[in-house]
Image (tube, rainbow, N blue to C red; front, side, top):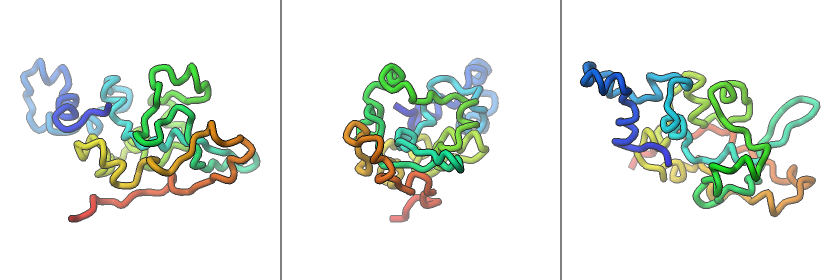
Length: 183
């Protein structure tokens, strides 16, 4: 589960700051994703960059002539379509061999990561959106903001590959509202 609230703040404090007695209070207040590179993040910090939208778990199609990649509403067979979480995350590569593990190098080379992806945003020098659980402190805001795939997908186990083109969608590549809704 992604880090949230106080846990996100605690993860932002490095061991060096802890040992030094937090000599620079203002440095402690800067979230880890704003002061560390992807390569410098701990495993827990890295995993918390995933907002739980599951857009990367959608099947994509590539045009062989142009290289253009389009998303479909067809989700990986391991995706829990309600929670937008993998049903067997630790062992996913055993069941889905083409599931691409993300690391800092891979994140910087994949052209199909959605524009809302926390890994992509940080790699490109941008901040996380308001609905990201590390910012909002609530893992539900990704769903409330309409960013997640929840309620918008169908499992790949239900669709023959030759019908994937019938399920092409644009929304995974669309950007969200820039600010939290008022009210």
